[in-house]
Each structure stands twice: as C-alpha cells, then as structure tokens.
Length: 138
Image 1: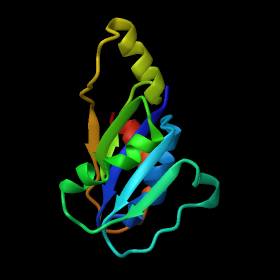
Image 2: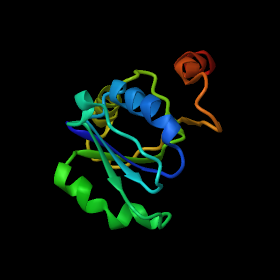
Image 3: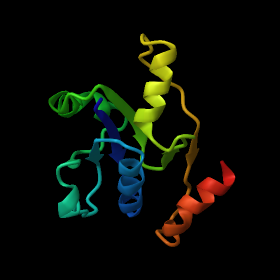
Image 4: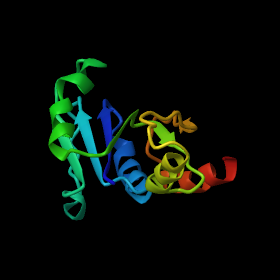
C-alpha cells in the first residue's frame, strides 16, 4: 500500500523540515509539495526519492487540481491532502496501520475524516519540541 501526501506551501517554509520528518515517520511513502512562494528550500539528498517540490505560481485552492498529474505519476493507493500547518493525529502513529484497521471493518471505504491539530506560528523556534507537546495534549 502506497500513501502520498499532497500539500501546498505558501510562506510556510520554516515548517518544512519538521513537516517532512513528521509525515515520513507516520509512514507516508511520498510527499509532493506545491511551493507557491519564492523562499528557497532544498530537499535533503537522502529524502529526494520520497519528497518532491514543485515550484508554482500561487493560484490558491486551484493548485491542487492544476498539478494533480504529479500524483498520478506516483500512482499511490491513498492520497492525503492537507496544508503545511495541519498535523494529522493517529493513535497508532502509522498511516498504514490506521488504513489496514479501517479497511478490515469495511474494504469499500474510500474517504476518511481525521483528528488533526493546526499550528499557528510565525517563527521557526522550538519546533523540535512540537512532537512532545502533541503527544502530551492528544
């Protein structure tokens, strides 16, 4: 089972290191980031097979539809669309475990609602402690 994360980034580059690590640790196989600003970000070399950044013009919510062909190339079984400041909360801490458990209940499920948290930060200080804060509060 392949899981991809499809996200847009607009003046949120200071989240990217934490965001990428968090979602790869949740078990996502690929992360596609539509980067709609001029802030430079370089994907670490060891993650280039899992993380793809497409620099695009900011056209708001239309970004997802316009560049959906990128997801089609990856051909994942599941696509999760969120914003950079949204944090998926899973009891199992693994997206594939979550999906497998739910599909055992009903193999025809094709959409999920999730519990999630949202960051509102305007700097990149203390992001290393975010995991601990999340685990203590959820």
